[in-house]
Length: 128
Image 1 (cartoon, helix red, strand yellow):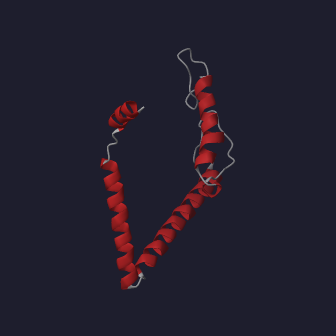
Image 2 (cartoon, rainbow, N blue to C red; image 1 turned 90 degrees about the horizontal axis):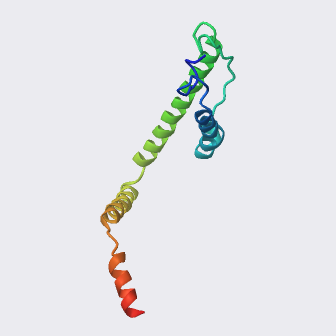
Image 3 (cartoon, rainbow, N blue to C red; image 1 turned 135 degrees about the horizontal axis):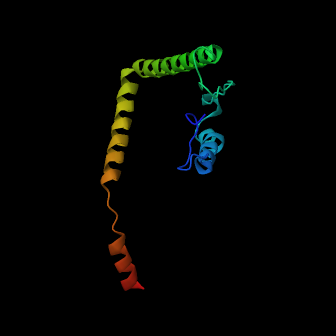
């Protein structure tokens, strides 16, 4: 069993890590991902082997099928988005390119911006 759980330096269950893992699984991941991207599988745990091909073939097959289908959906969605931009008229493509160029310029300019709060604070102090 100790191959599959975090133990402290006394070989006892590390409850802090266990709690952090539960918070991650029950709170943080569900808040960060849409429900459509979270899949739950029921699997019987073996204390001797964890998950193995011989005892968990149904689970592994279902997991593999789900993974395959989700990756396929992502590829299909990406292809549709790519085709959308390829099917624009030349005028629309030109306009889109100009908007993207402006957006890129804005992001790059904002990255280089250095505020001058120190000088503004001095000016405020002089005025007040």
